[in-house]
Image 1 (cartoon, rainbow, N blue to C red):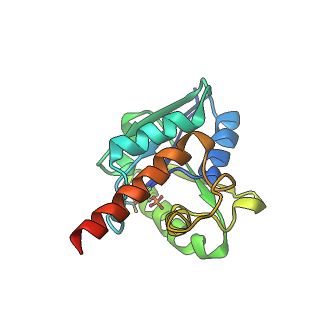
Image 2: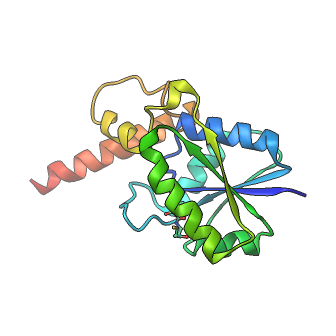
Length: 168
Ligand code: PNS
């Protein structure tokens, strides 16, 4: 059975991530979407919340599992019996960082390869960070976030704003 891991911060999952999940699930026997720690980012949602948002977004995809880990991706893949990492590539700007991560993961776990799926054109500009920025304004988010998580995302933005106002 070919098992692939799709790792990321998913803070929150976007429509671009969901598109990669659906396409990778068509290619592999099993896909594990794993919420992991990116030490350069301070997430808006906890790891458990991000797992929940992904589960709500994917609906009925029978060969997709959602998990989280605070460990090393290369070790996680070994534990799960996977030799493939799937990543989405949006623009050239993603490439350098992704290339470096792929090489490091392969160095730590030589059985592990990284495969890139190119983002579909309507998602090339989309990232969790841009969605978080847009969340501060009155913008229709239905092209950017999976429908089931939009109210939860908006509520979090409102809660953060309220907290900020109470501090003033
Ligand atoms: O969505 P992101 O933030 O680009 O995902 C990056 C992520 C979480 C996949 C990466 O930071 C990661 O693999 N974290 C787990 C810890 C690890 O293995 N670090 C070494 C990777 S070079």
